[in-house]
Image (cartoon, rainbow, N blue to C red; front, side, top):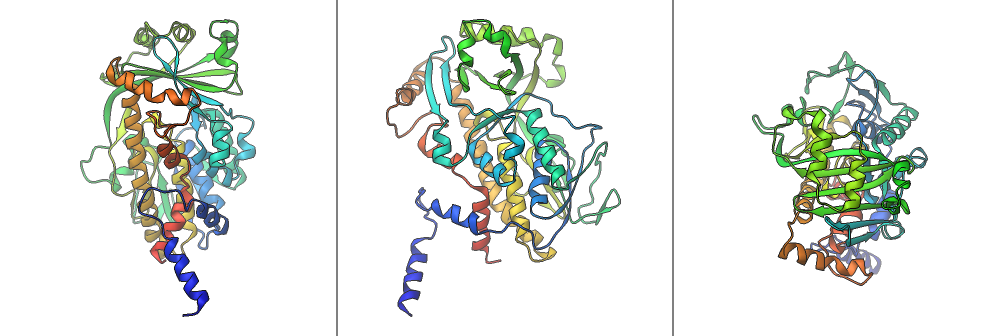
Length: 458
């Protein structure tokens, strides 16, 4: 063996991924992405079912790799229900690679901090610095945006990439082994968008397997006119700089931030609820919501009093699947796993990584015969990651919802160093906890897919 070969072999031995928790080889991810080519070698005809956030982003990821994509949407017109959504750094990084920066820039807000506040007083008990810290550490911003604006940006990008969107087109039946859908030839169908009642999931799931389980919680979602808040000096201070504020207390929390270029104040109010959503009366929603948070920080109560309308959503947790693909059908998003929002890594964020991962996997195939192996690699990487993120989200819900007592006091004390700008090695605030922060926001779905492909030897 020559000296050069010996050196190469030695370096290769040392540069294998460590089995212990370490970021020492993270720099290699950037090299992998720089050298990888996402342009597909085998263009496919692909159907995406549903034109929501996930459907459009999936279409963008696939079309940007060179595939022919058609999206079927059952609604007669496009639109998004809801209010604000967070796009953390591990997702904005991928959206940037998909060419979405110019489409998003006029809609997004970049918050400076996340402040955890005590439920009854509003005193800050935990703090995460987002800007410029996340840009500097993870090389990508942390955004918040109105869902409708995000949808508009995705829609325009999809159209510019040549994606065909068919409205008023409902998919009621799938033929995973056949070659047509609505008389159109197709190679693969990606479905996520009939959500937890997914028709497609039944083709992938075990017979009789439940898609989700109730968590015993629900959330009110609402927005408040910022102009009204600015007129009240008792609460206008919340608008002085872009930030996220979370009041946490016994079995409840309230998440807030501005969206719509600072014109709307987004609110998510989580609370216990074990009743059947079918029995919910929308006419009682406002009064019920106010009653849930009586006795909380009086400034927060004042803002809640400004809410004119609200939508109540049940919070459910998906039952993990061992596979997401069957025949020519792939399910994604809520159809595959419903993610709780407590890590802000749900529909948009986990979705960004799935969408980009799908595009990366299919760009590697050299013939259609390789598709099952490509999807197998995608599943191998993403299913494990998704189940762990679900675990982190469930844990956050428990950490935030302590009743006053010894555990609550210990939690608050453990977060104090971050509020004082002091060094710390761990925190119950998973946005700040060093190990969780690196695991969450440094994660690069494309790099993980690339590594998995190299290991597969395909």
